[in-house]
Image 1 (cartoon, helix red, strand yellow):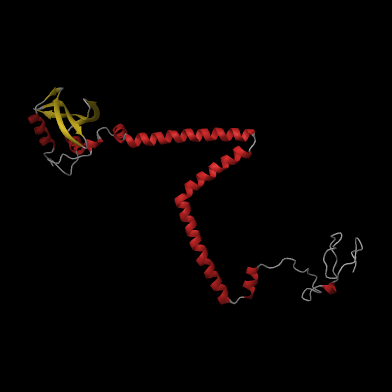
Image 2: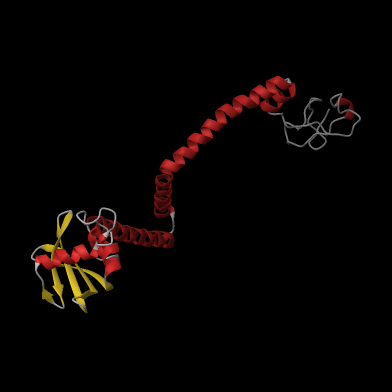
Length: 245
């Protein structure tokens, strides 16, 4: 048999000419018996080992193979999901850092410039967020007072009068036009309550001052219409406030 292009003699079972690489036409008589006379070309792709095994195996072996594959795959997927849940943010951060490094090292001038600007912006935002977290963590009372002044007193209990009713609940129920505020004086923190109540048959402006002592507080004094009252009157007023409880 000869190559129809360059004339080189070739073996009858060759598909390509060894000299010029031209595809050789195959005589139908030389084709595999199962394809001869069918007009089909032989399959040039070798079946995969998995397909060969699947075709030759019995149903029981196939089922066993699927079970083994599932036993290996499912734990691997679970481990991957667990890893991503634990270290997903870390992995994402590493990928972002790696992408910036690649851009800086291999990118053009414009890409490197944009990457550097982005890194600076991210760093500034990171510093700002970190500073805000530290500030909030070390000044929780300050931020709490901004939202709810005197929360440490308002949400607490005067146990000698009631262990279930908070100071705020009792005072809001007894007084009108309630207002809470905080201030500092002589190194101490104070919580001030202002409200209107009835005193000797008249409506008066009452002011109750609470003094913060560490994690506790005490009722410091009572003012009626701006005049400081005695401790006797202070405790009499508190007894009246909690009378219904």
